[in-house]
Length: 110
Length: 123
Image (cartoon, chains in turn cyan, brown):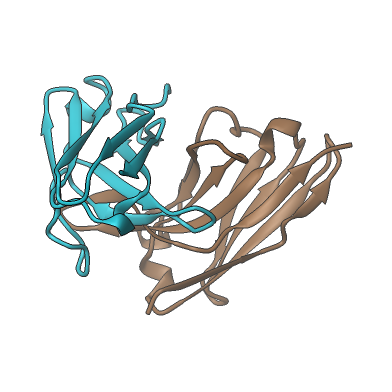
């Protein structure tokens, strides 16, 4: 199972919006609505930010939103803040009943 | 509050074995589907495998790189998850995270994470 494809880096200024893409296949992202997004700050464990494509767990700011079109899922951060600087990973359920993560995206707040 | 505390990491030689443990609290462990995820130094996340709850069959699934070498088990009486790692390779060097799987309309993937334990495979 190959990792899902994400851009290596995305940057934006405070207050701006950025979008991170996550591209898979019809056997993972395109085939199921079980796409999740995780935020990881340096030296810390990842944290769930979005599940089932567009649902936010309790406590996650509504600046974070998710969507999917075909084989590509997206995470949008609106009103970018300094604390949003982190690595972000997508994940999807697969037709093999396993999970696969994305390659990861480093978000830089300029 | 969900708490997952891993232990058992350390330095092991190639070909050796190691068993990781994960003590869980703050939720009904026996009902939970549990997974292990690893992260090699400076690299991305990699899903290792999962064990379902006994009521859902208690079956396991593994990623291809570890299948046949790693075994996930659980002791619901102790609220503890295990990862037995055999025939270790240098490429197994990583921080290993114990995680829960979340449930909404279905089991949707990794939810809560432990702090991780470092496994280093080196001669």
